[in-house]
Image (cartoon, rainbow, N blue to C red):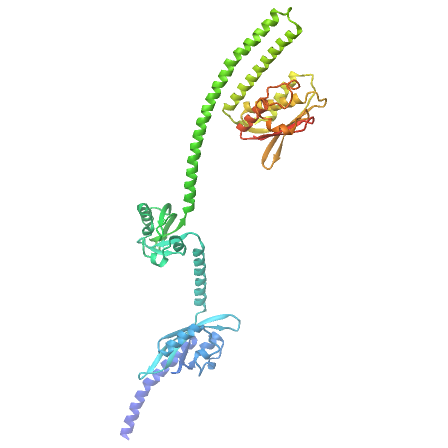
Length: 514
């Protein structure tokens, strides 16, 4: 009896710790039931032997439906095929394993959960897994949003035409987009870790190194330079490099980010333009020299005309006048007519010389542009013309406030010639009318002087602006044939043009721009 009592006492002592262990396990179980996670266990064949109530709280599914089957046979657990393969491999290898699966909730929303488990061994024999399950919907959503953001960033970076690069604090390339390979022929992965200057023309490296050093030292916040890049095939490409510092979490400069833009085509165009400009400048200098020489010749010619030709004309006219006066009673009517013709011819020749000298002067005169009211100038010319022949009745119509940027002296000469022409060729018209107006052709102003006088045949219009060219008989309409040539020269010197339209007996219209 004593022996039996001792044995019972020892048994009670052994049971007491077991009860404490059981109580501790129950307390942990209760805590797990209260937590958002759930616990689970499987046997050696990976079939569930225990799933806590937390599974139902999280998924809305009865945990008892999982008992006796492996997770991949459960209709409540859905995962990608490759995830199942990796999960089963780890389970079969008795390694720590995890699986993220999706579950379609009753609200038609998709939720994500993660199973995490560790193998259990007893006496060295694998008996199954113990683990927990937890919701990872927020994490998966964040990871997906991050992945989508990274994909958008990648798409943008790869869609641009410039090389996008980053360097580390030592100046070594740490990132390059795909344009790098297309531009240089160098593979991106083999270029990483090398300094950018390894790919530049040797002559340009010192300047670029100095620029990068200034950025890393915080001396400049950004910079841009043009440099030459060597491709894998040894070709030289011009690039425009821009860079700015990469700032770390603590405000330190941890590298440089920037772009490399291929400007080779632009450089070729700039060089071509430079060569063209140099050639044009050379041509302009040559043309200027030719014009200066021509002007000198023209001045010499004008001087010669003014002095060498006027003297003989004056002599001819003077002797003819002396003959007419001294022999006035002895001359036959025919002789008197001859002398008068000689004098008229000398006078006409003098007028031609004056007109020629004036044309030469206007051709070489410097153009001084200012705001000029063509309407006011035209009215001044009209008043002068009317005062010379007050008996003529001509209707004038002038559009008001036609203001241009031009040389006041030259455009007055131009208007005087056009208006006097209209006055002259409308003589004999009982209802003579002369107008000066303007119209718009797009954004360009077209001025027009029009009359309803004699007009002319358009078949001869090509000769209209040639010096000394006349489309009418001089006996009918006096003139030197220089007026319209002078008009054209003045308009051309203002960068404009002139053309004419006419019909015999129905007047003429002169259109011009300035």
